Image 1 (spheres, rainbow, N blue to C red):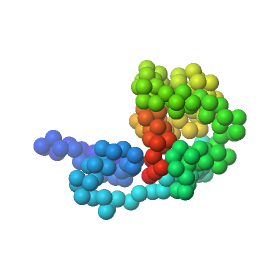
Image 2 (cartoon, rainbow, N blue to C red; image 1 turned 30 degrees about the vertical axis):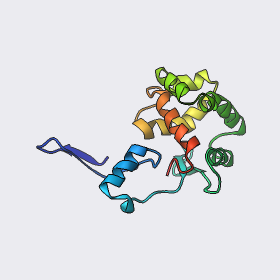
Image 3 (cartoon, one colour; image 1 turned 120 degrees about the vertical axis):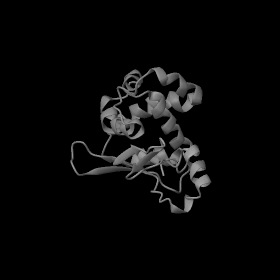
Length: 168
């Protein structure tokens, strides 16, 4: 947000760039009710990360349109060799299996754990948190992974696993 203020009637005004995930059904419904769908500019299904150790460089996870979810996400992770090593990808995938197999009941049960605590519990390397989940935590709730509930992250990840254009 560049600026936000409340007027004398109590209504909030905000200026600046706003980004919305296409996977959020309530916001999609709101855009439809407002009749502004034709004015939205959707970006491609890609997650772009700044490289902490390489200032000014970015790394992409591109989800190909030709593959359905979750295969497009698996492809995006496997094709990106700039952020995570193959052993880190394997440990990360194994750590995510309970979330993928347990569905919504599993996701809801993780609300008591921070992102950082959950990653440690699942045996996911700390570098995965540093390279990927600091950015995801801040993008979703503007806070660090040691403060954010893993449930929030898993809800977003489940959308990417279920919806071909989850991050548009």
